[in-house]
Length: 342
Ligand SMILES: C=CC1=C(C)c2cc3[nH]c(cc4nc(cc5[nH]c(cc1n2)c(C)c5CCC(=O)O)C(CCC(=O)O)=C4C)c(C)c3C=C
Ligand SMILES: [Fe+2]
Ligand SMILES: [Fe+2]
Image 1 (cartoon, protein in one colour):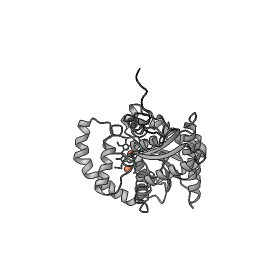
Image 2 (cartoon, helix red, strand yellow):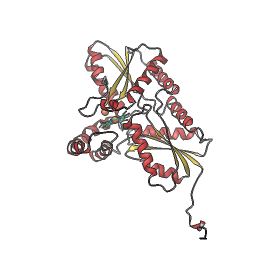
Image 3 (cartoon, rainbow, N blue to C red):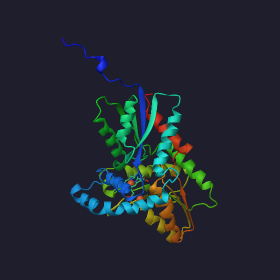
Image 4 (tube, rainbow, N blue to C red):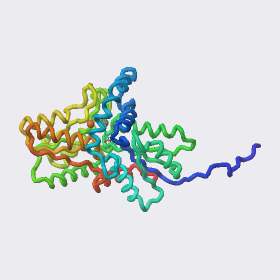
């Protein structure tokens, strides 16, 4: 019989903890060309985001996009940069959300809350390794998207499972499903709309629920994103008691020459103004935190386009961010998904 292995040679390990990892899309480290290029290269090389054949896409990506877009998008980021912390708002809000969630677990010391970005820093792998070293035998990964899309939720989950490939002693992994129809989320959106509209001395004729778009071909291939956006909007409309015309669904942030989900936000904003609508508000229910796409594209560009096309009043309703309503949603979803572990 062989001798038992020498226990002293076994590295000491932490155990007994549960990790919660909040993951948002990503963010460049700075607005300069090199930082923007690094970020966009990682983002736009993801096969879940751009599904075209690499033979077709890489010459365009390396030949055109990565030579021109970093400068253009860097300028847009400069307009909305969080100067106080020298970082993007997406990073600021995601960190705040993790801190506030950690505080909500103050009486359950076995729970460790952390945050990561799918593209850029801190990476999912680095934070999962850190959680494991701190003794997390179980990790709940939370892609911060209320509506599921392969380009967002699935790519976060892919990266989390990829991180396990390198681990000898893997933690158990759970992922948070979409929560597009959760009553706590719908209530939070309705309360946020009510609170922000109450601060205006005018009432919008139309409110746009503007979601980030995806190429229509992804929908045709079976992505549930479009249907989940529509359901969120329907439930929100019902909660507010509004008619269909008062809360319109639109899709923003089109990228590339393909057809994307319609109606497009930019075209709708312009058309409403040209049709004589004078007052609109826009909410972005699909974004957990304000970011380039909401602060620059909507509060900046869409507002300007509406006012230049004959509109008179434009309001952007902020995302739920790290507000008490927003934290109530994230805390609720996490506690539900931790059942059986806690
Ligand atoms: C084909 C390209 C893209 C798909 C598909 C896509 C889907 C998608 N994106 C978000 C959320 C965000 N996107 C953000 C920025 C952004 N998105 C794309 C392209 C696609 N997105 C690009 C190229 C960029 C970078 C900016 C630019 O070059 O225009 C952001 C903002 C990040 C920030 O730091 O502020 C978010 C958030 C969702 C929810 C989604 C599909 C449902
Ligand atoms: Fe995007
Ligand atoms: Fe955009």
